[in-house]
Picture (cartoon, rainbow, N blue to C red):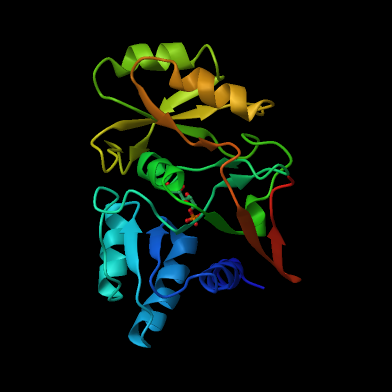
Length: 227
Ligand code: 5RP
């Protein structure tokens, strides 16, 4: 089965958990795109929800789908958030942020009573940081100094460039993509990175997930954290 179809299957499965009356956090990325399409269809059939987008990109797509939108300022408690991930480990810890929305995604995840992650099976890894870098959002002021400090934790922190331009997050910050051989202790690495002045947030999501739905060639796999 094609990767896009696996993303769609996972996203549509997650959307089954959305009920009328809910405040729903809307993640960012190509997998969430399918969730937004499905939610749009359901809204046109009468589903009443308020969506809280995690990025300008999601705000635009969700708006086009006719989903009523609000902010975390107006709705500081969110019933359910559906979001994507870049890597998922066996403990359901994540790397997020290749799409550049990690700060808003983490704020909205933290404000949510329930967080469901959707992904295709290429995102499943034994250890985080083995396939992709860890995105770290940093303020522009003194970013070179922040980069040097990050270089004591990871092998290579690289300023993100897109089309030969320095990438700016929706918050107007830079992103340093930090390459590791592997992240053996995600909880400690998350805290250690966030202690560096200039770091706004990093893309490690540790112990935050309530359900991961993975699209595989054999169908949907649902994993919940062990309690
Ligand atoms: C954006 C993210 C996305 O959730 C993550 O990059 C997954 O995106 P995609 O579904 O396109 O692979 O963290 O900041």
